[in-house]
Length: 324
Ligand code: XIL
Image (tube, rainbow, N blue to C red; front, side):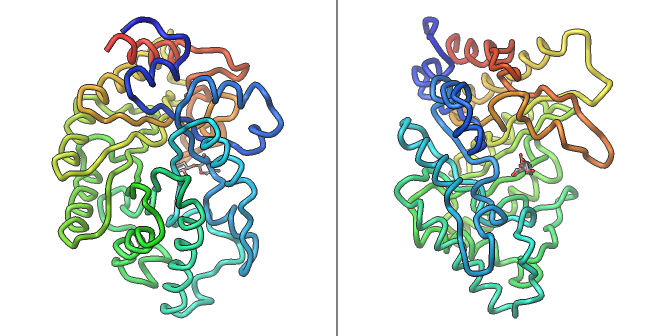
């Protein structure tokens, strides 16, 4: 394929969906931010604005202002809009304590949340991360307020409740499950069980936060294919690429670019046509504040630098799409 003007053009020509997680304030106050997004991406997802903590300022109120801003921006710009996320153990509102609810009340609470939020965006959101990170790092089911109160069926219930109010594709999303490993094996068993029970699940999201130890593209391909063989779609939902702090090679930006390109080519090889980067530019990346058991990472994991400059990683993704 010939050279295209922007990343978005290259993605469109390849019928590939390339997205970024967005911050509503940046969208409002920084024209460079929205122009960069509109020109270079054909998909968006709110980085935080659809999480329960942001949507539910108090027990009986919702605030959709920020989520609406991002979703409407996406719709206006003919983008694929991903909703993130309906059920998660993190980023719950401070006023919310599971022990204020009986199990039955908790069930009603979660069902109402899903009905209200997924229902509101019925005509606008194309895919939902219905359940996020329900499997623990060792492959066991994560113990959360939801599993404690509702039992492990909460996962199936969440998908069914979402299906009642939206036609969006419904995804299970998780980190650390990009390659074939204990955790992705457990997720495989989980979604296989859901399908056997006729639970309305359409896909699996692999977050692909490549932090320090980058998942092996061949293993990613094999992993994607086994989910596809179940009849599920697979999307890369939160990609960023960083080194362990203090362990950068001599040419970090080139190595990072090469990895981005490898992943895009892997996706194209196996027919996974949807990849979201977790932010627009390095200056706003969550990795800058992220510490994993004391471990920090280099703070420039995205396709644009803090001044909206196109990085080698940008060129690599674009060329990967153009040259495929
Ligand atoms: C992160 C956001 O990027 C941060 O701004 C926020 O403070 C914490 O959450 N897995 C997920 C995302 O599914 O929702 C997380 O996003 C990153 C890890």
